[in-house]
Length: 284
Length: 284
Image 1 (cartoon, each protein chain N blue to C red):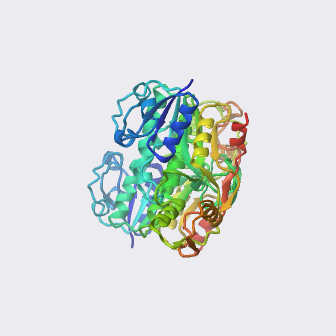
Image 2: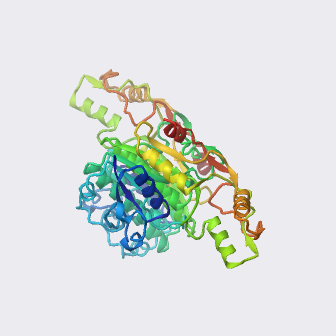
Image 3: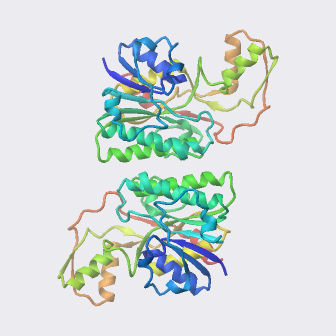
Protein backbone atom coordinates (compact mmCIF):
# COMPACT_ATOMS: atom_id res chain seq x y z
CA UNK A 1 0.00 0.00 0.00
CA UNK A 2 1.36 3.34 -1.08
CA UNK A 3 0.43 6.69 0.48
CA UNK A 4 -0.48 9.00 -2.41
CA UNK A 5 -1.22 12.71 -2.26
CA UNK A 6 -3.56 13.81 -5.07
CA UNK A 7 -3.91 17.55 -5.75
CA UNK A 8 -6.84 18.81 -7.79
CA UNK A 9 -8.81 15.88 -6.41
CA UNK A 10 -12.17 17.54 -7.09
CA UNK A 11 -11.50 17.87 -10.79
CA UNK A 12 -12.45 15.83 -13.84
CA UNK A 13 -9.23 13.82 -13.73
CA UNK A 14 -8.64 13.96 -9.98
CA UNK A 15 -11.94 12.31 -9.21
CA UNK A 16 -11.07 9.28 -11.33
CA UNK A 17 -7.47 9.11 -10.13
CA UNK A 18 -8.70 8.92 -6.54
CA UNK A 19 -11.19 6.21 -7.51
CA UNK A 20 -8.49 4.23 -9.26
CA UNK A 21 -6.07 4.48 -6.33
CA UNK A 22 -8.75 3.36 -3.86
CA UNK A 23 -9.72 0.42 -6.07
CA UNK A 24 -6.08 -0.70 -5.77
CA UNK A 25 -6.27 -0.33 -1.96
CA UNK A 26 -3.82 2.55 -1.76
CA UNK A 27 -3.98 5.18 0.96
CA UNK A 28 -5.14 8.49 -0.51
CA UNK A 29 -4.59 11.98 0.78
CA UNK A 30 -6.80 14.19 -1.36
CA UNK A 31 -6.59 17.94 -1.60
CA UNK A 32 -8.39 20.73 -3.43
CA UNK A 33 -9.39 24.29 -2.67
CA UNK A 34 -13.03 23.79 -1.78
CA UNK A 35 -14.09 20.96 0.49
CA UNK A 36 -17.76 21.56 -0.35
CA UNK A 37 -17.12 20.36 -3.88
CA UNK A 38 -15.97 16.94 -2.71
CA UNK A 39 -18.32 16.11 0.18
CA UNK A 40 -20.65 14.26 -2.14
CA UNK A 41 -17.95 12.28 -3.93
CA UNK A 42 -18.23 8.54 -3.34
CA UNK A 43 -14.62 8.56 -2.15
CA UNK A 44 -14.95 11.42 0.36
CA UNK A 45 -15.08 9.19 3.43
CA UNK A 46 -12.40 6.82 2.18
CA UNK A 47 -9.59 9.35 1.91
CA UNK A 48 -7.86 11.78 4.21
CA UNK A 49 -9.06 15.10 2.82
CA UNK A 50 -6.99 18.25 3.45
CA UNK A 51 -8.27 21.48 1.90
CA UNK A 52 -5.51 23.65 0.45
CA UNK A 53 -5.27 26.63 -1.87
CA UNK A 54 -2.15 26.39 -4.04
CA UNK A 55 -2.73 29.87 -5.46
CA UNK A 56 -2.32 31.44 -2.04
CA UNK A 57 -0.24 29.65 0.59
CA UNK A 58 2.24 30.57 3.28
CA UNK A 59 5.74 29.93 1.94
CA UNK A 60 6.97 29.08 5.45
CA UNK A 61 4.77 26.01 5.50
CA UNK A 62 6.54 22.64 5.17
CA UNK A 63 4.29 21.05 2.55
CA UNK A 64 5.77 17.60 2.82
CA UNK A 65 4.93 17.49 6.55
CA UNK A 66 1.64 19.33 6.07
CA UNK A 67 0.39 16.55 3.79
CA UNK A 68 1.67 13.81 6.13
CA UNK A 69 4.78 12.72 4.25
CA UNK A 70 3.24 11.08 1.19
CA UNK A 71 5.20 8.42 -0.69
CA UNK A 72 4.00 9.74 -4.01
CA UNK A 73 2.57 13.05 -5.19
CA UNK A 74 0.20 13.10 -8.16
CA UNK A 75 -0.06 16.78 -8.93
CA UNK A 76 -3.16 17.50 -11.02
CA UNK A 77 -4.21 20.94 -9.75
CA UNK A 78 -4.14 23.85 -12.21
CA UNK A 79 -6.31 26.95 -12.47
CA UNK A 80 -7.75 28.79 -15.45
CA UNK A 81 -8.63 25.91 -17.79
CA UNK A 82 -9.84 25.48 -20.45
CA UNK A 83 -8.81 29.00 -21.44
CA UNK A 84 -5.48 27.96 -22.96
CA UNK A 85 -4.64 31.45 -24.23
CA UNK A 86 -4.93 33.30 -20.92
CA UNK A 87 -1.65 34.91 -19.82
CA UNK A 88 -2.59 34.00 -16.21
CA UNK A 89 -0.99 30.59 -16.85
CA UNK A 90 2.37 32.33 -17.29
CA UNK A 91 2.00 35.23 -14.89
CA UNK A 92 0.50 33.40 -11.92
CA UNK A 93 0.06 29.64 -12.23
CA UNK A 94 3.59 28.87 -13.36
CA UNK A 95 5.20 30.42 -10.32
CA UNK A 96 2.70 29.29 -7.72
CA UNK A 97 3.05 25.69 -8.94
CA UNK A 98 6.82 25.96 -9.09
CA UNK A 99 6.86 27.23 -5.50
CA UNK A 100 4.46 24.49 -4.43
CA UNK A 101 6.52 21.68 -5.95
CA UNK A 102 9.85 23.15 -4.86
CA UNK A 103 8.65 23.45 -1.26
CA UNK A 104 7.36 19.87 -1.31
CA UNK A 105 10.61 18.53 -2.79
CA UNK A 106 12.97 20.52 -0.60
CA UNK A 107 11.15 19.34 2.50
CA UNK A 108 11.54 15.70 1.58
CA UNK A 109 9.18 14.75 -1.27
CA UNK A 110 11.03 12.18 -3.36
CA UNK A 111 8.53 11.01 -5.93
CA UNK A 112 6.55 13.49 -8.03
CA UNK A 113 4.18 12.98 -10.95
CA UNK A 114 3.01 16.19 -12.57
CA UNK A 115 0.82 16.92 -15.55
CA UNK A 116 1.81 18.43 -18.86
CA UNK A 117 -0.05 18.76 -22.13
CA UNK A 118 0.19 17.66 -25.74
CA UNK A 119 0.01 21.38 -26.60
CA UNK A 120 3.65 21.57 -25.51
CA UNK A 121 4.45 20.04 -28.92
CA UNK A 122 3.03 23.21 -30.47
CA UNK A 123 2.30 23.18 -34.17
CA UNK A 124 4.06 19.88 -34.88
CA UNK A 125 1.99 17.39 -36.86
CA UNK A 126 2.00 13.61 -36.87
CA UNK A 127 3.07 11.03 -34.32
CA UNK A 128 4.77 12.90 -31.49
CA UNK A 129 7.37 11.27 -29.27
CA UNK A 130 8.58 12.51 -25.92
CA UNK A 131 12.05 13.34 -27.26
CA UNK A 132 10.69 15.89 -29.71
CA UNK A 133 11.87 19.34 -28.63
CA UNK A 134 8.85 21.25 -27.30
CA UNK A 135 7.60 24.29 -29.23
CA UNK A 136 4.67 25.51 -27.12
CA UNK A 137 2.92 28.53 -28.54
CA UNK A 138 -0.03 29.26 -26.29
CA UNK A 139 0.19 30.61 -22.74
CA UNK A 140 -0.98 27.38 -21.09
CA UNK A 141 1.53 25.18 -22.92
CA UNK A 142 4.36 27.67 -22.40
CA UNK A 143 3.63 27.73 -18.66
CA UNK A 144 3.53 23.93 -18.43
CA UNK A 145 6.71 23.42 -20.46
CA UNK A 146 8.46 26.09 -18.37
CA UNK A 147 7.35 24.39 -15.15
CA UNK A 148 8.86 21.10 -16.37
CA UNK A 149 12.14 22.79 -17.26
CA UNK A 150 12.28 24.53 -13.86
CA UNK A 151 11.64 21.30 -11.93
CA UNK A 152 14.26 19.51 -14.02
CA UNK A 153 16.71 22.21 -12.97
CA UNK A 154 16.00 21.33 -9.33
CA UNK A 155 16.88 17.71 -10.16
CA UNK A 156 20.46 18.77 -10.83
CA UNK A 157 20.95 19.43 -7.12
CA UNK A 158 18.46 17.14 -5.45
CA UNK A 159 17.41 13.56 -5.99
CA UNK A 160 13.76 12.84 -6.67
CA UNK A 161 11.77 10.72 -9.09
CA UNK A 162 9.98 12.95 -11.59
CA UNK A 163 7.33 12.00 -14.14
CA UNK A 164 5.93 14.60 -16.50
CA UNK A 165 2.79 13.23 -18.12
CA UNK A 166 1.69 14.87 -21.36
CA UNK A 167 -2.06 14.42 -21.58
CA UNK A 168 -3.72 14.25 -24.97
CA UNK A 169 -7.49 14.43 -25.44
CA UNK A 170 -10.10 12.93 -23.14
CA UNK A 171 -13.78 12.33 -22.89
CA UNK A 172 -16.03 11.18 -20.10
CA UNK A 173 -18.42 12.09 -17.35
CA UNK A 174 -17.81 15.35 -15.58
CA UNK A 175 -15.76 16.94 -18.33
CA UNK A 176 -15.96 20.72 -18.65
CA UNK A 177 -18.92 21.98 -20.64
CA UNK A 178 -16.93 23.28 -23.63
CA UNK A 179 -15.47 19.88 -24.53
CA UNK A 180 -16.98 18.68 -27.79
CA UNK A 181 -18.85 15.64 -26.46
CA UNK A 182 -20.15 17.69 -23.51
CA UNK A 183 -21.49 20.27 -25.95
CA UNK A 184 -23.03 17.56 -28.09
CA UNK A 185 -24.71 15.99 -25.08
CA UNK A 186 -26.06 19.38 -24.02
CA UNK A 187 -27.43 20.01 -27.51
CA UNK A 188 -29.18 16.63 -27.51
CA UNK A 189 -30.65 17.24 -24.06
CA UNK A 190 -31.93 20.63 -25.18
CA UNK A 191 -33.63 18.91 -28.13
CA UNK A 192 -31.55 20.68 -30.81
CA UNK A 193 -31.93 19.12 -34.26
CA UNK A 194 -28.55 20.35 -35.51
CA UNK A 195 -25.10 20.39 -33.92
CA UNK A 196 -22.69 23.01 -35.27
CA UNK A 197 -19.05 21.99 -35.32
CA UNK A 198 -15.76 22.51 -37.12
CA UNK A 199 -14.85 20.62 -40.28
CA UNK A 200 -14.21 17.64 -38.02
CA UNK A 201 -11.28 16.34 -40.06
CA UNK A 202 -8.75 17.05 -37.31
CA UNK A 203 -6.95 13.90 -36.23
CA UNK A 204 -6.70 13.71 -32.45
CA UNK A 205 -5.65 11.22 -29.82
CA UNK A 206 -8.52 10.41 -27.42
CA UNK A 207 -8.75 8.30 -24.31
CA UNK A 208 -11.63 7.85 -21.89
CA UNK A 209 -11.14 9.56 -18.55
CA UNK A 210 -11.10 6.17 -16.81
CA UNK A 211 -8.22 5.05 -19.02
CA UNK A 212 -6.38 8.34 -18.47
CA UNK A 213 -6.68 7.95 -14.69
CA UNK A 214 -5.49 4.34 -14.92
CA UNK A 215 -2.45 5.45 -16.95
CA UNK A 216 -1.60 8.29 -14.58
CA UNK A 217 -1.67 5.94 -11.61
CA UNK A 218 0.38 3.30 -13.43
CA UNK A 219 3.01 5.87 -14.35
CA UNK A 220 3.08 7.43 -10.88
CA UNK A 221 3.48 4.17 -8.96
CA UNK A 222 6.68 3.05 -10.67
CA UNK A 223 10.11 4.57 -10.97
CA UNK A 224 11.79 2.55 -13.68
CA UNK A 225 10.62 4.81 -16.49
CA UNK A 226 10.80 8.50 -15.67
CA UNK A 227 10.84 11.91 -17.33
CA UNK A 228 8.33 12.92 -19.98
CA UNK A 229 5.68 10.32 -20.75
CA UNK A 230 2.84 10.72 -23.26
CA UNK A 231 -0.55 9.63 -21.97
CA UNK A 232 -2.06 8.74 -25.33
CA UNK A 233 -3.71 5.97 -27.30
CA UNK A 234 -1.26 6.12 -30.19
CA UNK A 235 -4.36 5.76 -32.43
CA UNK A 236 -5.50 8.97 -34.10
CA UNK A 237 -9.21 9.42 -34.70
CA UNK A 238 -10.93 12.24 -36.58
CA UNK A 239 -13.13 14.49 -34.48
CA UNK A 240 -15.85 13.74 -37.01
CA UNK A 241 -15.68 10.01 -36.31
CA UNK A 242 -15.48 10.57 -32.57
CA UNK A 243 -18.73 12.52 -32.71
CA UNK A 244 -20.43 10.16 -35.17
CA UNK A 245 -19.50 7.13 -33.05
CA UNK A 246 -20.88 8.81 -29.96
CA UNK A 247 -24.18 9.63 -31.71
CA UNK A 248 -24.46 6.13 -33.08
CA UNK A 249 -23.64 4.47 -29.73
CA UNK A 250 -26.33 6.51 -28.00
CA UNK A 251 -28.88 6.21 -30.81
CA UNK A 252 -29.16 9.99 -31.09
CA UNK A 253 -30.64 11.52 -34.23
CA UNK A 254 -29.07 15.00 -34.13
CA UNK A 255 -27.64 16.22 -37.47
CA UNK A 256 -24.04 17.40 -37.73
CA UNK A 257 -23.30 20.74 -39.39
CA UNK A 258 -19.64 20.45 -40.36
CA UNK A 259 -17.54 23.55 -41.03
CA UNK A 260 -19.65 25.93 -38.96
CA UNK A 261 -16.69 26.80 -36.72
CA UNK A 262 -13.11 27.39 -37.90
CA UNK A 263 -10.38 25.10 -36.67
CA UNK A 264 -8.69 26.50 -33.54
CA UNK A 265 -5.52 28.40 -34.38
CA UNK A 266 -3.42 27.00 -31.53
CA UNK A 267 -3.58 23.37 -32.61
CA UNK A 268 -2.18 21.56 -35.63
CA UNK A 269 -4.58 19.64 -37.86
CA UNK A 270 -3.29 16.14 -37.19
CA UNK A 271 -1.27 14.94 -34.26
CA UNK A 272 -1.23 12.03 -31.86
CA UNK A 273 1.08 10.66 -29.20
CA UNK A 274 3.62 7.90 -29.50
CA UNK A 275 2.70 5.69 -26.54
CA UNK A 276 5.61 3.28 -26.46
CA UNK A 277 6.96 4.58 -23.15
CA UNK A 278 3.50 4.30 -21.62
CA UNK A 279 3.08 0.77 -22.97
CA UNK A 280 6.43 -0.22 -21.50
CA UNK A 281 5.16 0.89 -18.11
CA UNK A 282 1.77 -0.81 -18.42
CA UNK A 283 3.22 -4.08 -19.75
CA UNK A 284 5.98 -4.18 -17.14
CA UNK B 1 18.01 61.42 -33.70
CA UNK B 2 16.40 58.62 -31.77
CA UNK B 3 15.75 58.67 -28.03
CA UNK B 4 17.13 55.38 -26.67
CA UNK B 5 16.79 53.99 -23.17
CA UNK B 6 19.70 51.69 -22.24
CA UNK B 7 19.33 49.51 -19.14
CA UNK B 8 22.40 47.94 -17.56
CA UNK B 9 24.34 50.96 -18.81
CA UNK B 10 27.15 50.51 -16.28
CA UNK B 11 27.97 47.02 -17.52
CA UNK B 12 30.56 45.60 -19.91
CA UNK B 13 28.18 45.79 -22.87
CA UNK B 14 26.12 48.77 -21.72
CA UNK B 15 29.12 51.03 -21.55
CA UNK B 16 29.98 50.38 -25.21
CA UNK B 17 26.37 50.56 -26.37
CA UNK B 18 26.06 54.02 -24.84
CA UNK B 19 29.34 55.07 -26.49
CA UNK B 20 28.14 53.77 -29.83
CA UNK B 21 24.78 55.54 -29.62
CA UNK B 22 26.43 58.84 -28.66
CA UNK B 23 28.91 58.55 -31.53
CA UNK B 24 25.89 58.38 -33.82
CA UNK B 25 24.41 61.50 -32.17
CA UNK B 26 21.45 59.74 -30.62
CA UNK B 27 19.83 60.89 -27.40
CA UNK B 28 20.60 58.41 -24.61
CA UNK B 29 18.72 57.77 -21.41
CA UNK B 30 20.97 55.52 -19.36
CA UNK B 31 19.93 53.54 -16.33
CA UNK B 32 21.54 51.18 -13.84
CA UNK B 33 21.21 50.47 -10.15
CA UNK B 34 24.17 52.38 -8.82
CA UNK B 35 24.90 55.88 -10.06
CA UNK B 36 28.32 55.85 -8.37
CA UNK B 37 29.50 53.23 -10.82
CA UNK B 38 28.88 55.48 -13.80
CA UNK B 39 29.97 58.93 -12.60
CA UNK B 40 33.45 58.41 -14.03
CA UNK B 41 32.30 57.09 -17.40
CA UNK B 42 33.26 59.38 -20.28
CA UNK B 43 29.61 59.45 -21.30
CA UNK B 44 28.16 60.35 -17.89
CA UNK B 45 27.60 64.02 -18.69
CA UNK B 46 26.34 63.34 -22.21
CA UNK B 47 23.32 61.23 -21.27
CA UNK B 48 20.27 61.63 -19.12
CA UNK B 49 21.04 59.23 -16.28
CA UNK B 50 18.16 57.80 -14.22
CA UNK B 51 19.10 55.33 -11.46
CA UNK B 52 16.70 52.40 -11.20
CA UNK B 53 16.67 48.99 -9.53
CA UNK B 54 14.85 46.47 -11.72
CA UNK B 55 15.05 43.81 -9.01
CA UNK B 56 12.90 45.91 -6.68
CA UNK B 57 10.49 48.42 -8.15
CA UNK B 58 6.98 49.66 -7.46
CA UNK B 59 4.62 47.90 -9.86
CA UNK B 60 2.33 50.98 -9.87
CA UNK B 61 5.03 52.98 -11.60
CA UNK B 62 4.47 53.79 -15.28
CA UNK B 63 7.90 52.86 -16.62
CA UNK B 64 7.37 54.30 -20.08
CA UNK B 65 6.64 57.74 -18.57
CA UNK B 66 9.25 57.32 -15.85
CA UNK B 67 11.96 56.98 -18.48
CA UNK B 68 10.60 59.89 -20.53
CA UNK B 69 8.90 57.99 -23.35
CA UNK B 70 11.90 56.53 -25.16
CA UNK B 71 11.61 55.65 -28.85
CA UNK B 72 13.66 52.51 -28.37
CA UNK B 73 14.56 50.37 -25.36
CA UNK B 74 17.83 48.43 -25.38
CA UNK B 75 17.43 46.15 -22.39
CA UNK B 76 20.82 44.85 -21.25
CA UNK B 77 20.36 44.61 -17.47
CA UNK B 78 20.55 41.18 -15.84
CA UNK B 79 21.77 40.09 -12.41
CA UNK B 80 23.76 37.09 -11.29
CA UNK B 81 26.20 36.64 -14.18
CA UNK B 82 28.46 34.86 -14.97
CA UNK B 83 27.05 32.16 -12.70
CA UNK B 84 24.99 30.48 -15.43
CA UNK B 85 23.87 27.60 -13.22
CA UNK B 86 22.32 29.64 -10.41
CA UNK B 87 18.58 29.00 -10.00
CA UNK B 88 18.20 32.72 -9.17
CA UNK B 89 17.91 33.34 -12.92
CA UNK B 90 14.69 31.31 -12.94
CA UNK B 91 13.31 32.12 -9.51
CA UNK B 92 13.90 35.85 -9.48
CA UNK B 93 15.39 37.44 -12.59
CA UNK B 94 12.92 35.92 -15.06
CA UNK B 95 9.90 37.37 -13.35
CA UNK B 96 11.34 40.75 -12.43
CA UNK B 97 12.44 41.27 -16.05
CA UNK B 98 9.10 40.06 -17.38
CA UNK B 99 7.30 42.52 -15.11
CA UNK B 100 9.69 45.31 -16.11
CA UNK B 101 9.19 44.76 -19.84
CA UNK B 102 5.46 44.17 -19.57
CA UNK B 103 4.99 47.39 -17.61
CA UNK B 104 7.05 49.33 -20.16
CA UNK B 105 5.14 47.84 -23.10
CA UNK B 106 1.68 48.21 -21.62
CA UNK B 107 2.32 51.84 -20.85
CA UNK B 108 3.28 52.64 -24.41
CA UNK B 109 6.74 51.24 -25.24
CA UNK B 110 6.60 50.16 -28.88
CA UNK B 111 10.14 49.14 -29.74
CA UNK B 112 12.10 46.73 -27.55
CA UNK B 113 15.47 45.09 -28.02
CA UNK B 114 16.34 42.54 -25.36
CA UNK B 115 19.28 40.24 -24.86
CA UNK B 116 19.37 36.47 -25.09
CA UNK B 117 22.24 34.02 -25.17
CA UNK B 118 23.75 31.38 -27.42
CA UNK B 119 23.30 29.01 -24.47
CA UNK B 120 19.60 28.92 -25.39
CA UNK B 121 20.67 26.50 -28.17
CA UNK B 122 21.74 24.10 -25.42
CA UNK B 123 23.90 21.16 -26.41
CA UNK B 124 23.45 21.60 -30.15
CA UNK B 125 26.71 21.60 -32.11
CA UNK B 126 27.65 23.30 -35.35
CA UNK B 127 26.35 26.38 -37.10
CA UNK B 128 23.23 27.49 -35.24
CA UNK B 129 20.47 29.46 -36.93
CA UNK B 130 17.75 31.45 -35.23
CA UNK B 131 15.02 29.05 -36.36
CA UNK B 132 16.56 26.13 -34.46
CA UNK B 133 14.20 25.16 -31.63
CA UNK B 134 15.85 26.18 -28.34
CA UNK B 135 16.93 23.47 -25.90
CA UNK B 136 18.35 25.46 -22.98
CA UNK B 137 19.70 23.32 -20.18
CA UNK B 138 21.20 25.66 -17.64
CA UNK B 139 19.24 28.01 -15.38
CA UNK B 140 20.43 31.19 -17.10
CA UNK B 141 19.52 30.00 -20.59
CA UNK B 142 16.18 28.58 -19.44
CA UNK B 143 15.30 31.92 -17.83
CA UNK B 144 16.27 33.88 -20.94
CA UNK B 145 14.42 31.56 -23.33
CA UNK B 146 11.37 31.68 -21.05
CA UNK B 147 11.47 35.48 -20.98
CA UNK B 148 11.47 35.57 -24.79
CA UNK B 149 8.50 33.20 -24.96
CA UNK B 150 6.58 35.25 -22.39
CA UNK B 151 7.20 38.54 -24.24
CA UNK B 152 6.18 36.92 -27.53
CA UNK B 153 2.91 35.94 -25.85
CA UNK B 154 2.30 39.63 -25.10
CA UNK B 155 2.79 40.36 -28.81
CA UNK B 156 -0.36 38.40 -29.56
CA UNK B 157 -2.46 41.13 -27.94
CA UNK B 158 -0.35 44.22 -28.32
CA UNK B 159 1.70 45.67 -31.14
CA UNK B 160 5.37 46.35 -30.52
CA UNK B 161 8.63 45.75 -32.36
CA UNK B 162 10.64 43.08 -30.57
CA UNK B 163 14.24 42.02 -31.20
CA UNK B 164 15.76 39.17 -29.22
CA UNK B 165 19.52 39.24 -29.67
CA UNK B 166 21.37 36.02 -28.93
CA UNK B 167 24.88 36.99 -27.88
CA UNK B 168 27.74 34.61 -28.51
CA UNK B 169 31.20 35.09 -27.00
CA UNK B 170 32.94 38.41 -26.48
CA UNK B 171 36.25 39.85 -25.44
CA UNK B 172 37.41 43.33 -24.57
CA UNK B 173 38.15 45.89 -21.92
CA UNK B 174 36.09 45.76 -18.78
CA UNK B 175 35.00 42.15 -19.18
CA UNK B 176 34.35 40.20 -15.99
CA UNK B 177 37.45 38.70 -14.42
CA UNK B 178 36.59 35.05 -15.11
CA UNK B 179 36.50 35.45 -18.90
CA UNK B 180 39.45 33.64 -20.42
CA UNK B 181 41.32 36.64 -21.83
CA UNK B 182 40.77 38.55 -18.55
CA UNK B 183 42.29 35.64 -16.65
CA UNK B 184 45.19 35.46 -19.08
CA UNK B 185 45.85 39.17 -18.74
CA UNK B 186 45.78 38.87 -14.94
CA UNK B 187 48.24 35.96 -15.04
CA UNK B 188 50.62 37.95 -17.25
CA UNK B 189 50.38 41.01 -14.98
CA UNK B 190 51.13 38.82 -11.96
CA UNK B 191 54.23 37.54 -13.74
CA UNK B 192 53.04 33.92 -13.98
CA UNK B 193 55.12 31.79 -16.32
CA UNK B 194 52.37 29.28 -17.03
CA UNK B 195 48.66 29.72 -17.82
CA UNK B 196 46.42 26.77 -16.98
CA UNK B 197 43.49 26.25 -19.32
CA UNK B 198 41.18 23.64 -20.79
CA UNK B 199 42.11 21.58 -23.82
CA UNK B 200 41.38 24.69 -25.85
CA UNK B 201 39.96 22.79 -28.81
CA UNK B 202 36.44 24.15 -28.28
CA UNK B 203 35.21 26.03 -31.32
CA UNK B 204 33.51 29.27 -30.31
CA UNK B 205 32.17 32.37 -31.96
CA UNK B 206 33.92 35.52 -30.69
CA UNK B 207 33.40 39.20 -31.35
CA UNK B 208 35.08 42.21 -29.78
CA UNK B 209 32.88 44.13 -27.37
CA UNK B 210 32.99 47.16 -29.69
CA UNK B 211 31.63 45.05 -32.54
CA UNK B 212 28.95 43.53 -30.29
CA UNK B 213 27.80 47.00 -29.22
CA UNK B 214 27.76 48.16 -32.85
CA UNK B 215 25.63 45.13 -33.81
CA UNK B 216 23.20 45.64 -30.92
CA UNK B 217 22.67 49.27 -31.89
CA UNK B 218 22.28 48.40 -35.59
CA UNK B 219 19.67 45.76 -34.75
CA UNK B 220 17.82 47.97 -32.28
CA UNK B 221 17.53 50.99 -34.57
CA UNK B 222 15.68 49.23 -37.39
CA UNK B 223 12.40 47.39 -37.55
CA UNK B 224 12.53 45.59 -40.88
CA UNK B 225 14.12 42.46 -39.41
CA UNK B 226 12.69 41.43 -36.07
CA UNK B 227 12.45 38.44 -33.75
CA UNK B 228 15.47 36.37 -32.77
CA UNK B 229 18.78 37.60 -34.20
CA UNK B 230 22.18 36.00 -33.56
CA UNK B 231 24.93 38.47 -32.70
CA UNK B 232 27.83 36.41 -33.99
CA UNK B 233 30.77 36.42 -36.36
CA UNK B 234 29.75 33.25 -38.17
CA UNK B 235 33.46 32.31 -38.01
CA UNK B 236 34.32 29.72 -35.39
CA UNK B 237 37.71 29.97 -33.73
CA UNK B 238 39.26 27.54 -31.27
CA UNK B 239 39.82 28.87 -27.76
CA UNK B 240 43.42 27.77 -28.19
CA UNK B 241 43.90 30.01 -31.21
CA UNK B 242 42.08 32.88 -29.54
CA UNK B 243 44.52 32.72 -26.65
CA UNK B 244 47.60 32.15 -28.81
CA UNK B 245 46.67 35.10 -31.07
CA UNK B 246 46.23 37.33 -28.02
CA UNK B 247 49.63 36.31 -26.63
CA UNK B 248 51.31 36.83 -29.95
CA UNK B 249 49.66 40.20 -30.58
CA UNK B 250 50.82 41.43 -27.18
CA UNK B 251 54.29 39.86 -27.37
CA UNK B 252 53.70 37.95 -24.13
CA UNK B 253 55.88 34.97 -23.29
CA UNK B 254 53.59 33.06 -20.92
CA UNK B 255 53.37 29.30 -21.57
CA UNK B 256 50.01 27.59 -22.08
CA UNK B 257 49.21 24.46 -20.07
CA UNK B 258 46.42 22.81 -22.09
CA UNK B 259 44.07 20.29 -20.51
CA UNK B 260 44.50 21.50 -16.95
CA UNK B 261 40.76 22.25 -16.63
CA UNK B 262 37.95 20.05 -17.93
CA UNK B 263 35.59 21.42 -20.56
CA UNK B 264 32.49 23.03 -18.98
CA UNK B 265 29.55 20.62 -18.90
CA UNK B 266 26.89 23.12 -19.98
CA UNK B 267 28.38 23.91 -23.37
CA UNK B 268 28.84 21.80 -26.48
CA UNK B 269 32.34 21.42 -27.91
CA UNK B 270 31.81 23.24 -31.18
CA UNK B 271 29.16 25.78 -32.03
CA UNK B 272 28.88 29.13 -33.72
CA UNK B 273 26.14 31.42 -34.91
CA UNK B 274 24.72 31.77 -38.39
CA UNK B 275 24.91 35.54 -38.90
CA UNK B 276 22.92 35.97 -42.09
CA UNK B 277 20.08 37.84 -40.39
CA UNK B 278 22.58 40.17 -38.73
CA UNK B 279 24.37 40.74 -42.04
CA UNK B 280 21.09 41.58 -43.72
CA UNK B 281 20.56 44.29 -41.12
CA UNK B 282 24.10 45.67 -41.32
CA UNK B 283 24.19 45.67 -45.13
CA UNK B 284 20.74 47.22 -45.47
